[in-house]
Figure 1 (cartoon, rainbow, N blue to C red):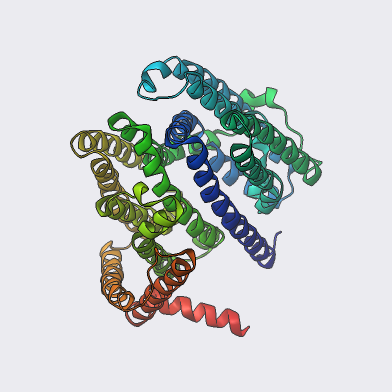
Figure 2 (spheres, one colour):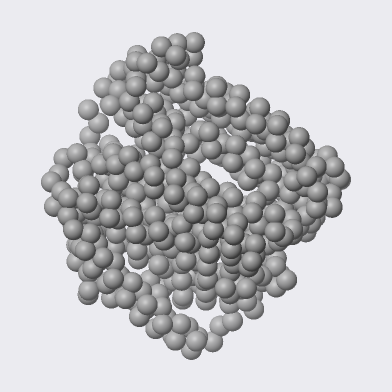
Length: 514
């Protein structure tokens, strides 16, 4: 039986390692993008972004399997039932092999349409095929070789994946930066290094898994038999698939729709902003992932009233971090873009405002989603289907008339209807068995606090004798002041008006005084 202290220690270690690698990875990501633009141009970078999004659309076939397998491994891992662990991982491998053939075949079929998809690209004809082919082969590695990493995730040893697999991918980025900067035919070298390092990372990760779990035995040939033996996994896969589909469509279709109405250069500009937004998303997720892992255990052991109390606490702290992140993104992104790649790569304030609103809804939804997962409430399949239809339909329609702002409005509308309105109602009515008006009142207090603090912080920052876009040092100083002013004021106001924030501060004081 794994102790609470052991689980806590593993969670802290996973979060710490994840955060360290996050900051290294995000720094390399910005440097890599800058080097890419300077040496290869926006057309090539836009091509690479579009090829990546096309591939990720094909990867929709995987959605749900990883989550369903991980949740099924917790109990046998705790009981050291290596026979059952081997069976479940074998079932995953069997499913992944079939998905790999679907993705591979879909990729080959998709390349037949490249002459039409990339008709507007002013690049050599082989570029789209080379980029997509390399990315496709790298993706297939996760289905044929590295799928066993799920056991490390389920066993709370994700830091071992970071130390081995992700560390090598960081080295790949460094090597690619050097190749693009100093070698002729930089894009060719970029593609070669992508493939070589990905194969190397997959090989090393498999060695780590074999060393960590020498007793693990897998038999993919028994996949069909195991599928019948574990019908719950198949059911969970089908349900989670629809929920993850909507989230994936949210992030992957926008550049494709944008390219249909604009150019690869516009995709690059949007991609620059999305790199910032996705970086913030990963940062907040890294901070909260280990905290949310305890929600399932809480639901299993406590009464709904106790779970609801903790929900208020988690919502308040998540709201504080998310609102602070969104304020910084909206206030600092134009200056950062100017210092990073130049003023000519800026998008308008309307676009930035819409992207910030989407970021806010995406960040704050996590607490509700975690509780829904803990209660096993996946059966509202109509909700993600509707979200996907709304997302694509409204983005295509509004994008036709208003371009990028219209596409973003389509995304925002789908999030508002399903994530902002339906999901909380579903959780409170089916999970907490309580009135959703409790949530409405709590949310209204948080929004009012944020609006007041937003205005106060803008007023305070207007008195600061710093220009964020004048230099890197000024930007860092201004950013720290913006985060401290907004975060500190919002924390104080929430503590005065919301019990959830007061409970969180009480928990922190208790931990510090132990």
